[in-house]
Length: 410
Image (cartoon, rainbow, N blue to C red; front, side, top):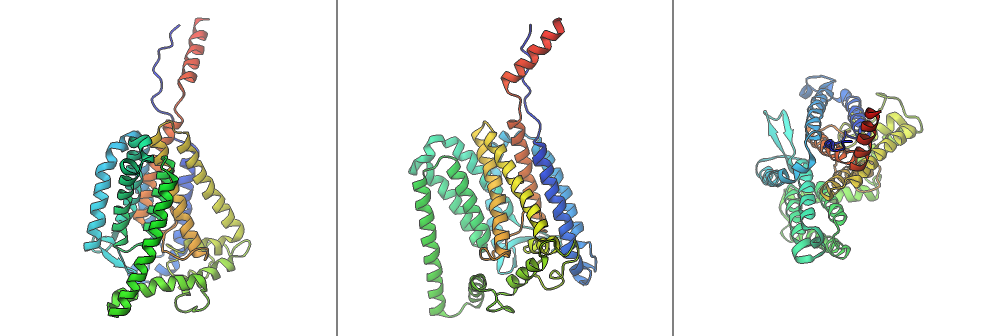
């Protein structure tokens, strides 16, 4: 009786995670069309084409699907070597974007390509590159991550450098997401909670001192108009969060329009495409505030179903990460799903006035080529990890071979 047949190298990708990813991307496509068509059709900038945003999103969805297929068929362990050059490439892009990037809403975070027809945001790549690099580094350090000098501190420096480069743009929302996700990976990797708590305290103190010193310098010098405008913009967001109706036509305008859209949705919603607030009332309805459009058109019931699917998607990814027998795969998976969960919470929390607005997109749903491409690349990595989690165990393989050989001898 022969039992020396080779063990299958890899399992099949997780079918549920794949379907959920495609479902979210598809829903994002129809919501981008619904939220943008009424704006594009009256704009010369968009050639009066109601499908302008939807077509671009469809192109990036197709490219993202191709990227996802490629990355899911590459053994995720190979990313352990690739993560180093990709990480330093992302650092270079973060440096260059501050020097020659496009400034939008006070942040220099975009590269303009093809005469402004295509924009690339290097911060999106930097998030994933940092997660994979941290997972590889922490896996290599092993138990040393609990030490301060040889384990935790070098990892902290890496996160600090990336966060600092993003803050130079400045992009506070993306910085927070990067730091929070990195902290999750570091904690999951076995770092001391005492070290993590101390770092959080120092960051909070440093942020408070920076804001205080900046305000003091501005008060003394009283001049840099651009800096003053930036500070006023940030303070305005805080004031809008505390009381959006205090200045409905000023600092609280965006949030008030978002709350009106959510309120108008009621229980069952106004129906797909029937939303009113997207008609030149709600700013960026196809981007930052797309959740408000979902709430207005599908109501409490539709929004609840959407959130349950989104939560199940995140839960499924976490389960896949935890089932992976390789620490690198587990940490990478936790980092990717943590990134999606944190970013979704910040977006939805902002438009519902649960937390201050930060201008963060909703993963897979909001319009944006860079974000969608990187997110689908990340899901390709997750599906590659799931193939390892689904790989037949040695014992089960031997049993199946023995059973087959036994039947053949009868």
